[in-house]
Image 1: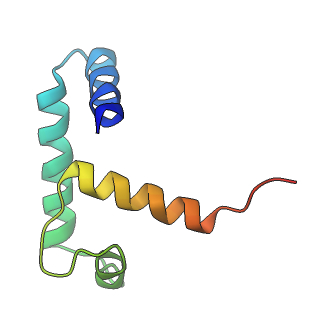
Image 2: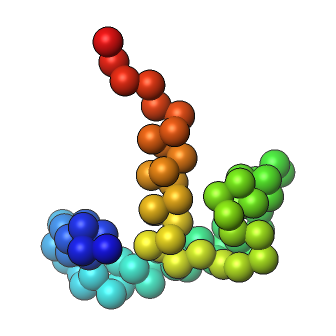
Length: 76
């Protein structure tokens, strides 16, 4: 996921930190959301393919991108 690494680098540069720190913060947010799902969030995790496993930032971003592509209709 070379593109993902470029995105992390850009976010890090804009925030005066490192890509590793950005990724770690993303993982913390994922862990928090996974450990304390809001009402109705569990089906979303399952729908994204994350039943009993905690996703990495790369995995979550990829699955969200796929979901968005499926639910986006082309303009025209």
